[in-house]
Each structure stands twice: as structure tokens, then as C-alpha cells.
Image (cartoon, rainbow, N blue to C red; front, side, top):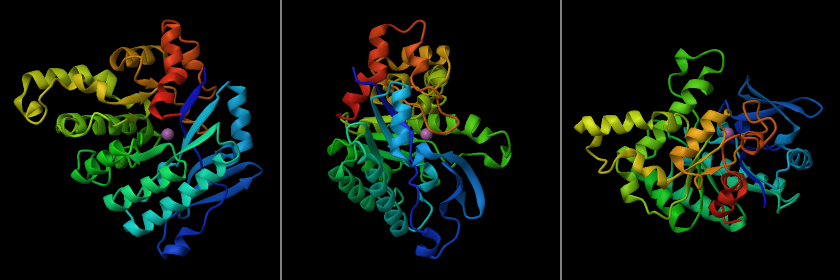
Length: 330
Ligand code: CO
């Protein structure tokens, strides 16, 4: 059985100088700091240290072999989304990185696959780019979990999701641009506290607004990091739905009943959390996702699932590869 890691990130070794191209500051660029090492820069600020696996397909494959991973699905780093920029610039940015992703995959198209990015502030341009990307070989699309103040239940975003459903393009929702940043300047609290909340917010925005009632059941949508806070907090949400009319005004069914409308990855880093996640979502709706090659990812990909003491062998096989093969049509 093929093992698929469906949540990994890439950065090309180099890309055009976007600040120069668009004449506006603070675009991401890569500062190469030493052999095989780099720093993602946003303007003149350090954003994140990265290493060669981000851009060198040979190194990616070596790490996959080390961890017995057959297929890796990679997507851009959310700092590249550019949703707050003029739409045409974000569209050009998406095209650049989508094409560079396929260049990395071309090293071994059977083992390296990519998700596209789209300029989600403009729905027409997004639909156009995602269809172009699919035709070129992308196996799905990654979107940020919000566009400024718009959550996933925004009419435009729902239109985009419907487009993906109608063209059988799987969607990975990745949290980004985290809320409450001013109160979380240190210790990566934005990643540890706000990111899981962002993901729960985007799942609940689709459930509580009734958007899942309007969106085709053909939509394949997956949320990163085990769906953030969702699995642990869904009991609280159900309780609120039962006892407060303002909670259920747009949501006709018990919130937890919508858990069969989406998928999550397995990036939760503890046995108890993965067990709870599998109990809530069902073993058909959890897929191996590592968030590698970033420091907050699983360092030996697949270990949590493979060495889990209570999941059955059948559940592990689904999570390690079977579910992703169906989800991504690979
Ligand atoms: Co990630």
C-alpha cells in the first residue's frame, strides 16, 4: 500500500523579485544563508528559517525514503498567498509559484505532487487559475482559511468551492494570518493558539452559516492540523446549538452531524489527540499530513500513525494512504 503525506510545503530556490516587479514593498523573498540553508524574508524582516528540502526534490525524496513515504503532496507556504494585494498581482504570483511547484515535481512526477494556490480575493481569477493548474498537473488547491474579514462562508468563496466541486478539484484549507496577533508577540503563540482557532473558525463558518447545506456533497475539502480545535470543542458547539436559538438560526442540523462533509490531516502530534480525532471524524476522513519540512511538522513522518497503540491496522492503512489516494484521485 502506498503511503501518502498530503500536507507538506515547498519554496522554490529562487523566484522573480516581486517587490521590483509590482513596485510595492514587503513581498516574500529568500535569503540564502549558507549551504542548504535559507531564511524566508518578508521585506527586510526574517520570517522563517528553512532548509534545502523546501526546494531540492532530491533531498525531499531522500527524506521520503528515510521515512518510508511513497508520495508527497506539497503546497505553497501561506505567506505567498497575497490575498491583501491587488488581485492581478496575486494572480501573477499564483501563476509563478504554481509553475515553479510543477518544476520541482517534474523530478519524479509519480512521487511528488502539488496543490495550486489562487488569488482568492478575486473569485473569477481563482476559478480560472485553479482550472489552469489542474490541466497542468496539480492534484488540488490549497486556500487560506480566510480572506481578510471574509470567512469561508463568504458568497464568493462558496462560489469558488462550488467550482472546485464541479471540476473534482480537492481543496486543502490552511490557517494563516492569525487573529489576535497583537496579544501573541512571543513563543510562537500565534501558531500554537491562534492557528488551531482559525481552523475551527473556518470549519464552523461553513457549518453554522448553513453553507454546507448549499454546497454540493461532491466537494472534497480537508482542513490542516487535524482541523485545529474542532474535534476537541465540537461537544461545546453541539451543546450551544441545543440550548441557544441564536446558535442554530442558520444551521438546521446538529453541528457535529456535518463532520462527514470534510476531512482533516493527522498533524496533531499526540496519541490521545489522534484517537479523539479518528473517533470524531471516522477513520475514512483522516489523512497523513506532516507539515514537513518545517520545524513545527512531524520530524519522522508517519511515526504517530504507524506506532499508534490503539488504532487498528485497517485504520492505519486508511490514514497512511488509502484515504488520500481516493481524496486526490491518485
Ligand atoms: Co502547513
